[in-house]
Length: 242
Image 1 (cartoon, rainbow, N blue to C red):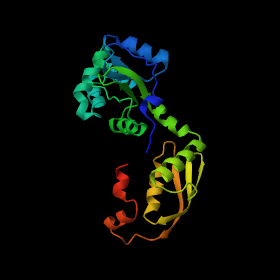
Image 2: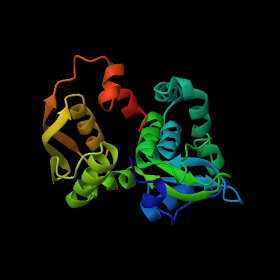
Image 3: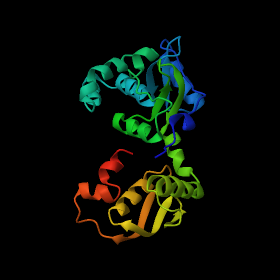
């Protein structure tokens, strides 16, 4: 399956700062450009870390709270308490930033980037080359841009990539309609085991919100063992390799 790549959705005009920038410089930078985070790079444009509004707010909140409440403020991140305490005393970008930065490569897919953001709880990913130099930045809104794909483009990809090239079906075997990103599959496949595979593959197409299954089948092969199904069609093991 073909997914959109990071270099197709990333912003190449990146607002960045150096490690020596002051707290005020960073705050001004975020406000002036109306952004919520900025990568920190060295003189060779290699990414050192990322500063977010959360980093600045943690610093500000701790400065205004007495020591007892300051400890409570940091307790919500027990594994990162030491680093969080350092940030509350930080005055420069190097001291305030989260490091090492969670980054993405330009040839990673939008799906991979979304998983990285979710697992690391970040809202943006600096995009770097093989040497760690900044190439661009991708945000959550950039990744969500795939859901703005026209319905017709989604339909063409479901037919061309899923039905014809992957499942090796004739184009008119299954009727495909798309409305507001919701794909409806109507028709009859040869085997029962092919139905969930077709539905799952259609759901993997970029921009698909959900898939409505109206598929039937001519042959019920659910009683066959996986090895026997492999002789007759596509299996779940094969699907996981896509």
